[in-house]
Amino acid sequence: MHELAVTESILQISEKYAREADALKVTGINLVIGKLSSIVDDSVQFYWDIISNNSLCKGALLHFERRDAVLHCNQCSVEYRIDTSLQPCPNCGSPDVKIISGEEFFVDSIEIEK
Image (cartoon, rainbow, N blue to C red; front, side, top):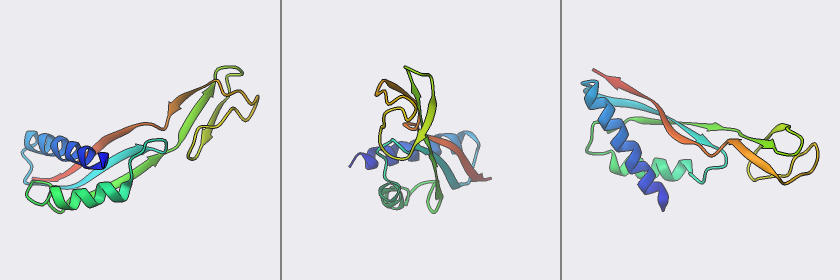
């Protein structure tokens, strides 16, 4: 259910910057989502189609870019990529790791018509 709140934030951000740019409408929104985030693309799209209907963003396409998760081992300093869940270091087996990327979620850019 948190996708509704996230989608509302996307709409607010998009409308704010569209107004500042004197846009007639928003045609596309580029989102970056880390593979470790719990954001579900289909849920965001579902809510988007509903809540953007009476806004500058009506009909705007959402473009989802999924970013790989990168971890750093605090024991042997190896950096490695994972697909979905946290995993110990493949080099030394240590669970003492730090997430470098993969949890992000942000609006990267907005496409508008003037």
